[in-house]
Each structure stands twice: as C-alpha cells, then as structure tokens.
Length: 44
Image (cartoon, rainbow, N blue to C red):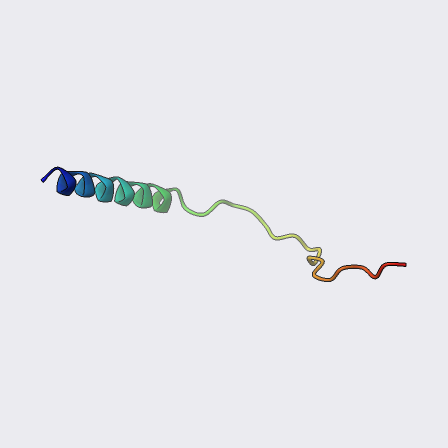
C-alpha cells in the first residue's frame, strides 16, 4: 500500500511539473546564424 501511495504521489508531481512547463511556454530565443563546425580542420 505504501508503494502505491508513493507511486501516485510521484506521478502527480511529475504531472504538475509538466503542466507548469507547458503553462510557461517555450523560451523566447533565436538560432545562431553561424553554422556549426562538423569537421575537424586538417593538421599541417
């Protein structure tokens, strides 16, 4: 019984965190115009 209460409490807490993050929305930001370097420069 104790494990069931702990599981229900954890599930409710996780659900509350998801709802809070959903209510806050995504952060306002932009992407960098510079491309990421995906190759290693050649060694001299």
